[in-house]
Length: 195
Image (tube, rainbow, N blue to C red; front, top):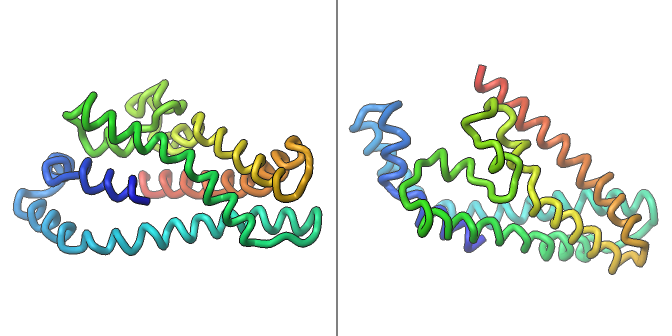
């Protein structure tokens, strides 16, 4: 959460916003919008923890339902803790992103920030070379997502005392199916809005 806030406040400054919006809006409207964003920036400090709490709860609920249906009783708190600990893997790409744009590519656009996804399929093909609807799925297919699945499976293995292959299957069936539905939803929205 701290990395996300740091990234937003350091990498997305007024110049980046101005450059992103000046082709779409007149100068006065861009300045007004930036002032409004600055005025409401404090809301980010409230919303980000709430969104993470919702994310962790939803993922833990997916795992909880799968385990209850297959094996019986388990404590939700244990699964919530597993999800929270596995989420640590996503600090790595966030740190890479900050490092990349502060030190390696200091001249960047809002699109560069938005579509930066280290060790993903999108980073191999480039966001300019694919249709808009495929960007999110290509960003999601990355090494860190794979490690996340493995960490979830390992955490489950420790809690329910089942073989790793079994817990990986539980992660694929519960979290994986939820993820596929989420990606389909986002892709549908992208296509609908882009049309």
